[in-house]
Image (cartoon, rainbow, N blue to C red; front, side, top):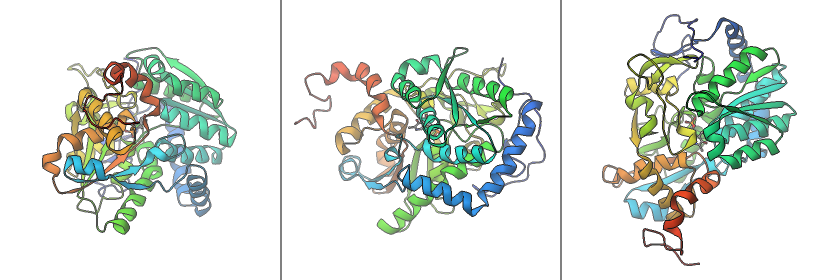
Length: 415
Ligand SMILES: Cc1ncc(COP(=O)(O)O)c(C=O)c1O
């Protein structure tokens, strides 16, 4: 099949605390380190380096400094009066769309780039779907003076042309992944192949909470800042904790980042998947890209193609910690359709003046659909990214409808 999945390390599986550190690289029955022999030392070296760096106050201070002065953290928690009025529940947005480069991806990338430099690596290899992780990786490489190669499916290169150009402008080389569905899954395969061949000088800057241990854990820790900030902002501005925290799930990094601030609270955690890429909803346990997790596959175990209107969620698997959180009932995962996402994209734009990334619009779509269930409650949505990258794609879809300045809802308008 060509996926990198030859099994190696998989020791015992004692239960880890909810959203605690993985035990032997496992979150319950999920996770692990299923990689070719050549990558085992690289994964082990990375685990040691991350563990040391994360315990080193100097590393933490340098990362905090970059997150503040370069990425623009803390991101605001914005209350949405008009959207709340329309939906009948109180909605806040955690504004990861306002970070430098336009999404949450920068949190993880700055962490991994600093770690790579600390490990003596001079080259970053990355995969990207929507292009946001690729842009963030190219940005961090430019900032730290590193070489950067980004793999991207040919289909995604066509629908996210703007981000391809941004990456090239930032000095990165963008290499097309032309096998399989020519989307994110295939870009991950190519990036892992590159890493196998260049591991001495390269760090694989993986863009979500997936892949072999230590990635799902390390990437979660780099995104923990979203949830910690958000919990504190909610406590200070509103009091207590929200009833619901909602986030879209591709690999699952923005969701796990915000969930990790509410692990101990009574807050209900909701992950929203695209109907055509609902790994938790439709998948069965399997192994892909170095991890055991829920995975959409056929009866022979072949990985099925995902489909989503948003390139960043077009992935048939999901990070192993989400599989675990679903199994133990701590988080719920629900699918939304592309049509619901398009309506949500328009809804947030016209009610709040905020154009969301199509990925983030999945979370809004669930809140909009479930407004009866949510009536009167407090809801925080992680707005993982801004919609600039999606405007050209949406012009094709919505262009005729919006011509003449008359939105289909009949509301808004004006100058
Ligand atoms: C804005 C945005 N949100 C969400 C995602 C999905 O990734 P994850 O599930 O790791 O947060 C992406 C991926 O490209 C993205 O660009």
